[in-house]
Image (cartoon, rainbow, N blue to C red; front, top):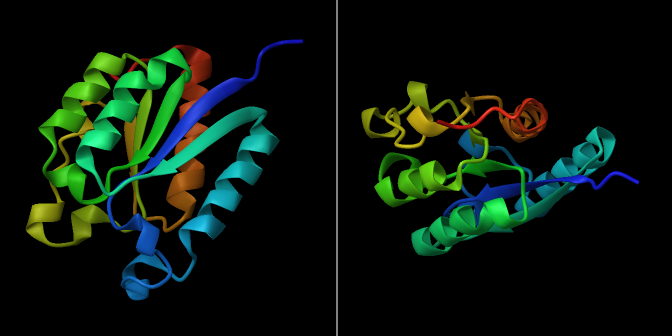
Length: 153
């Protein structure tokens, strides 16, 4: 039997507050509910997902660095670190596996400081503004990139 493809899904800072934090922007679903939808879609797509959340930049960087040992692609919502973390960008480059950046809100329609992403230039692509569907579209894109062998470089 063929080994299942594995994808790492990472949630950045403050996403543990989903459902309570600014529901007019981020919706009313909790992180646990979003994770269930991601896991359900992964099953339909025939891939395994491991889902993690951290408010710590260093922890996210470590997870991205370690990802190639166990995963074929990464889906990440870097949240506020999108706009600040060169370290996360450098880790994504070093990982040399497809990385899909996603955002629940459309960061390009928000405050000026939210419009720049340090990850976008090294990601396979960026999906932004589709609510929790961004995660599901991102997972589909990661699976496609994984299957095609496309890198984030």
